[in-house]
Image (cartoon, rainbow, N blue to C red; front, side):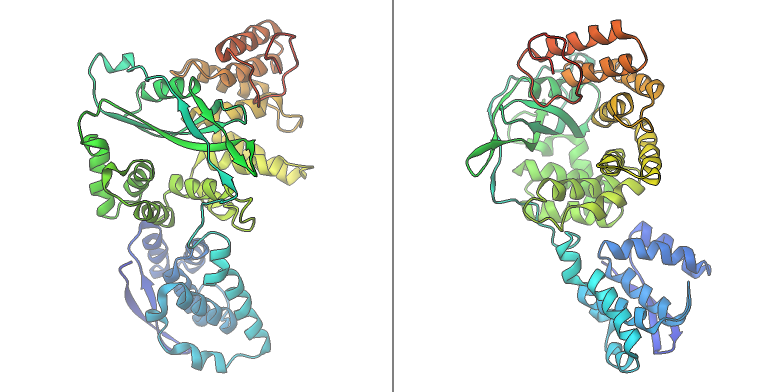
Length: 446
């Protein structure tokens, strides 16, 4: 990260406010320079939570100066120690020793609390720095057989290159369900073709201690790329790579995500991970969601690094998928009135997403939640009907969701028809249904 500095006087001599390159940092710095110290402090705090050492340094400088709150030597020293440990030792320099000698016992405790929460080892344990996405106790699911995807009719007969990256839930039965589209370039028609192909594929399920288990599996489908060009033959991917090299966070997410599943870009898996992590640190909500979701998927192997911090930042940044996950978390167990209100707010935000996966789950929750405060039949039906009018028509769970929305609205005739259509679309003994719908007595009904 390119860093310059602005000289400021402080009680400890000349401390500098660091200036980093990305947009969120520049916004925080603009607030600081305009004297909006409280707003600047809030923004630097958010960046500091994600391990940004320049923001940690600035929080230390602000605490020592009393900008954004009363002077606090203990917190100031704590933030400077965290910044040094997380990569900003050149900014901190040799100031710490003199500052630490002046702390009383209470101030030393305050400094230790900051380091215990935001120091390098603490952030590493939470999966904020050097996140580990592996879970070596599991053997991943593998593809056994998949039909060739149909070229979408919307392409008008022109075989233009396209890329679709999907995350699938692979059941212990080896069947794919609940597709989540992470990337579609271009989006028109290709996502639906990819979903249809994957839902008609067969997999060897993941195993844990030799037993089959449900798992999430990322998968890519490439359309219309001939010869040895690979993903580099897709213009949108090539352009994203150029922008990623120039520091664009959204492009870094696109490039890193593509490179995790395809070596044709010539980007190592380690570099792909760095691109995704840098995009997440630079405020890209989809990258933050990806990091948080990957950590959560492997949390059995590192429970403390469960992705919660990343998911919270992603949700605040507008990721509907992260908003959905946080809402589900809030509704677990016996939620308080405040948790119910927060969950409803998150679901309302997520209901407007353009994600098929998110809207399906939001509609299901609003239609069939056991909690009265969560159910909203009108919104559930509106969202479910929007899904039903979309291009993806091969996901049985979509019809289960629509059936639940009709039932919640009192239209049981349409509910039964849509449930039967969902079973027909599945065409197999479906396990792991999205909704606990009443059994109709038909084969495969839940």
